[in-house]
Amino acid sequence: MKLQKPKGTLDILPAQMAKIRYIEEMIDEVFANYNFKRIETPIFEHYEVFSRSVGDSSDIVTKEMYDFEDKGGRRIALRPEGTAAAVRAYVENKLYAPEVPKPVKWYYSGPMFRYERPQSGRLREFHQLGVECFGVKNPAVDAEIMAMFEAVLQQLNVTGYQFHINSLGDKESRDAYRAALVEYLTPFSAELSADSQARLLKNPLRILDSKDQRDQEIVKGAPSILDYLTEDSQAHFAAVKVQLEALGLAYVVDANMVRGLDYYNDPVF
Image (cartoon, rainbow, N blue to C red):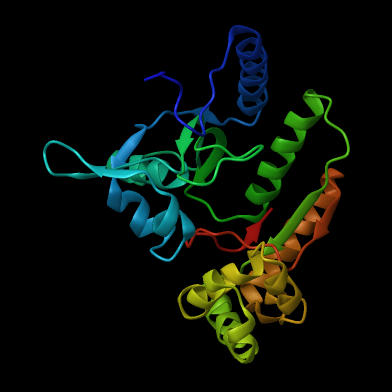
């Protein structure tokens, strides 16, 4: 048997590693200017950390998670993303306590794992950078995080990028929009892809994010979530846009942009 690296993984050799370290060190410097502090969580967690927070109907849980039973009979998962583990660490370490200064601003960078078909730019082991800000709900925080990432792109001399933003609203907004979306999509159910047919009753917002061409044509006529935002969510989104404009950060509102994880709400970018 010829031993090779598992499918969907990479060997990072010294020349490439030097570039990665340069980028990481620059990110450390930029994020420190915004008072975000680095954390590290375990590469594997209890399965429920992700299944409960990411959502049972998400592709990550239903198709992509590397999970297994360890020798003690515990169901374990390699982390497919960083937020759920960061929230678990925040709660487990009782950083929500009143005596802990807020906001708590963290970032992380490290390997994540998803079992999917390897292709260019999409591997089974990949490195992901993420930030979390706990303890406040303020439009300025959303704008600050976008500005911080733009600072990273500028430091790297990246050009030609464009920020796309949308709002998923609060729970009340999403419940109202979900009902409208199901009403619109139901007559097209037989024409939807198999994945979208399964999502229609479980997680219809994910259909907006489908890569299937038939689905994309159908959702062109779908109602916009921006028409279903509550007053609070409208005000929050409007304030984010004002902040971005004040910072000189150009953006495009993309009403069909959603996220495949159940914990997302209000602005996404």
